[in-house]
Image 1 (cartoon, rainbow, N blue to C red):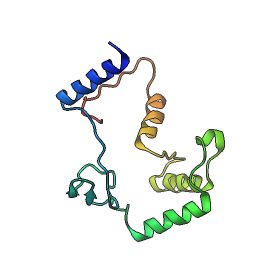
Image 2: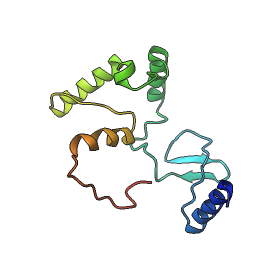
Image 3: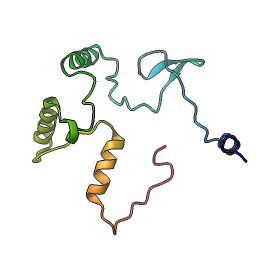
Amino acid sequence: MSLVDDLGAELAQFKRDGVYKRLNYLDSPQAPRVRMEGRGEVVILSSNNYLGLCNVAEVVQAGKAALDRWGAGTGSVRFICGTFTAHRDLEQALARFVGCESSLSYVSCWNANEGLVPTLLGERDIVISDQLNHA
């Protein structure tokens, strides 16, 4: 079999197993109810928008102001291209809030796990995680 045939067979098996993922396209801001292309209005129960801040006018405006002030990103990881002073200020405020010496912020939960796990675990440690822990 060719690579294309192998990949086609694997995709077909994913579909039979019910684990094939497809993208859902939103046609509205993230909220508890969204307009989803091809489905109309749906309720979102899997969002990371826990506090419902994604479409609050003041949050959107603050994001726009931050883009004007800081640009669209650092260009690389912070230890290579630098850390914005706004991130340092946030981390200092968070440390004061929880009463510790310092804190570190991450751009995503994935990045936090990538930083936390190797920091806390050593060669002799093991992590046991349920298969449904995360996609």
